[in-house]
Image 1 (spheres, helix red, strand yellow):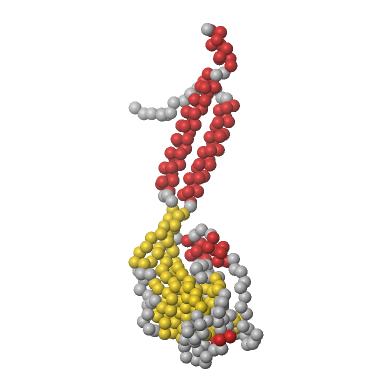
Image 2 (cartoon, one colour):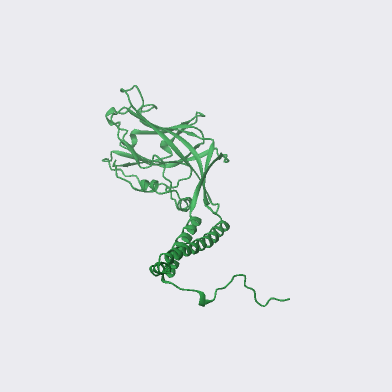
Length: 326
């Protein structure tokens, strides 16, 4: 026995189907709402969420790059930059960084604020980081009217807790004792980061400044550095570091303390991994769409039958007919 034609769905003859204007309007409304719901499901499928998890630091690094861009309201020859880590290794950074005479200005910068206010997009962050450039290094100018110094550059240091400080010559380290009237630790931090330089990543101290109220004032920054891995949905990774910071400032009497900027940093043994993940799989999306379309049409059909029954029950001619029969 062979089937020439098989149809599991019963058909209603067109003569028994009554087309109404209300049914057409309801069909348009149902179709519009259904399209909105389908687009919402597709949008949820396309949107990504960030997953945060901690893991033991998998990298064994003995050295770490530190990037610095600070402007201090003092002449360059009056400043000394040094670093000492917990292994008692001392680095003379005045020879490793560029000291550029400049004017001290507190220009407003909206770059960091705009980046901070935007939601984190791991894929865009990794793409922007690949286009990063080195710190800008201007040429030195011999103009004596410059009253500030721009300290800029990158250097390698041990991946250990340390203290990087910028002090006045002759205060805290050997050298000619600097006149107290020259000391002014008013400063602006444009960049302070750990690891490879990525200008697209904004750190807490970027574009910040402090105005000194005394010649003998110390600004202390306590940083906790956390190794961070960004991973997009294509498994492309960006290895970097981020940090939190606490600030403390202290004014003391002349020659009873060392005026300067002190950056004390520690490293966390854990790594923060931020990865992009889709809210649902493709199979999950198809199941949701099938259930949405089928369920919505069934519900709309039932609603149309109920509304039609109520409409015809309360129709004026039907009411008058019932009264006549009585």
